[in-house]
Picture 1 (cartoon, rainbow, N blue to C red):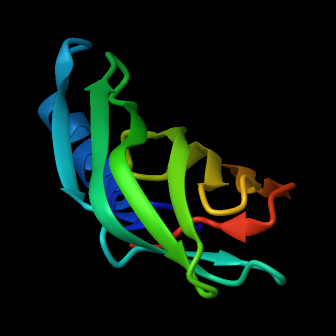
Picture 2: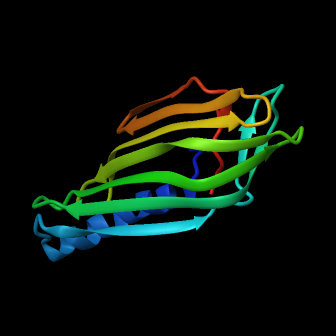
Picture 3: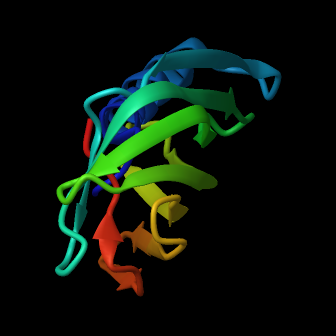
Length: 162
């Protein structure tokens, strides 16, 4: 999975199983859950883009993430999260300057035994070339459920990992 918050998503999938198991063992009530707001510097994140643009690297700005989870009465752990940016500037391999707009969303659930049931990740980022006026995009939807999955990718770039 390629995204601005892959580390968080992978941790979330692991947490889905771990918290789902713990909640199931504790006989969790539907009101169990929480929300976490976090942020981290965008500098150094690299959008891998096809030619002729080449890779585009963030030099400043902040990535914000909101992660929300609940455990229902059957012990199923549900998680959803959003990611957006603020004040991110980037530079392309050829020296062009970029800004970014867009967001991503992810969500999934695991049963009380920690077995993943379903997970979906959507990404839509537009990198605006402030030097030439053009733009490139990340447009990805990935979905996984027990026994099947797909990825739909119509962009010319991949979002940074980790």
